[in-house]
Image (cartoon, rainbow, N blue to C red):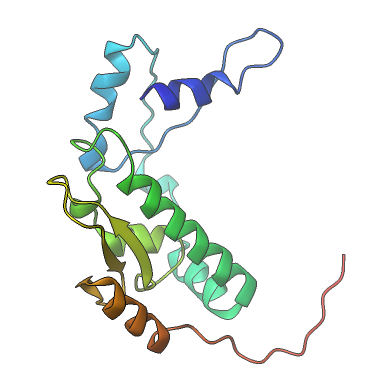
Amino acid sequence: MQEYIHRVGRTARAGGRGHALLFLLPEELNFLKFLKQAKVPLNEYEFANQKLSNVQSQLESLIEKNYYLHKSARDAYRSYLQSYASHSLKMVFNVETLDLLRVAKGFGFSTPPNVPLNVHSSKGGKARSRMRGGGGGWQSRPAAEKAKKFKKWQPVKDSRQFSR
């Protein structure tokens, strides 16, 4: 939580106050209790459903067709899962209870991509690699590495050239 408060503070310029917009999943709403205890001023906004546009199918199509967007979205998805797994407030941000399909859709995927995620046991056991997405499940590290070889995404040959 202190890291979040620090990062919001970093948005301040010339001695002013920092501002941030925070999106939370329903299971993350307990984070607000910690922010209130730290006396962080909060404003809640609600949006009417008729004011929201459904762009999910266009986003998925765009990510699927563009290699660079797909790679960036996959890297962002992996980073999100890794930060979630390493968060200090495990009672709020528990990677084991995260709905991967919903998260993947937020990054423009129709199905979660197969990304390695190292999870350390709270009982002091060895780190295990959890292949998130693609139906990998819990696997030992050698099995996870072997599975990764066969599930690698291959870009479509594209001869287009882009310039700025």
